[in-house]
Length: 293
Image (cartoon, rainbow, N blue to C red; front, side):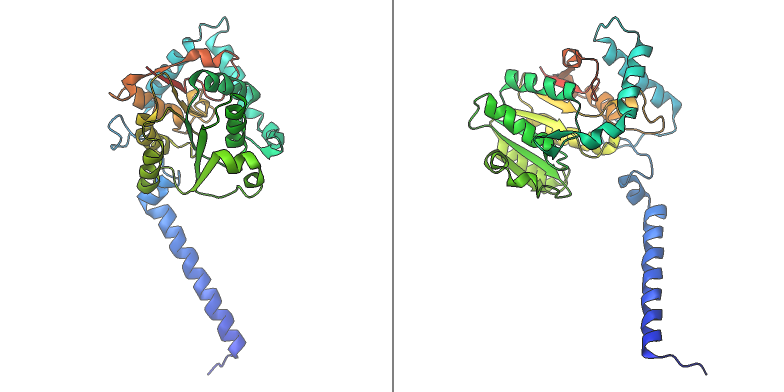
């Protein structure tokens, strides 16, 4: 009969517990369809009724998205060919290393200078009371929005920014963050978060920016939740549509899929693609600048 010391028993118990956790986690991720989909491991997109998933591998569905993307880009009336514009977008996305050194007043920000420039033009025209941003990261973009609002003299205008991770320790020290920005630590698609945001901005002039998880089903859910908040002549800006529009990632259903579906709905009919916001040609959001009619 083999005997074990207390230390050996403890080690064996810990090893068994760890193996059990790993096994359950593996089963959860790789065999539970809903979890796989929510984590982006199983492709899932929302159709125009926001509930029935489309076949990710359906070549017709991909062709439709591609055609709609090309039709949106064609609104630019550029002298550049579609192929040239696609190449430019690929170069922009492939140069990802540059984003490791992009800051707004010392705070990391994942934006192109051309998109940030265009955003200040939009804000100057719309003059929103509230900007609702899904996807905070380290807070650089929200801080940028705050500075633009400050520069425009919009003393009462503020920003709500939402993220499931709180990475705002550094930016939250900034006086303008404390004065103008409300950070919501939670999911942008959480019903409680949505209800809170709707109550907060009710009756105000609102602009919405979607820049969190770039899976089509998630973007579609965000659009469904927040598009109705957008005021007439204001914007719903769906970021990083180039990911599956070009496509940058051929086997990814992303923001473009969600935009294409949305524009086919009754609510989507109240919006139009504003190609004038793509004047620089270098934008991460082709077809994603949606203006409320």
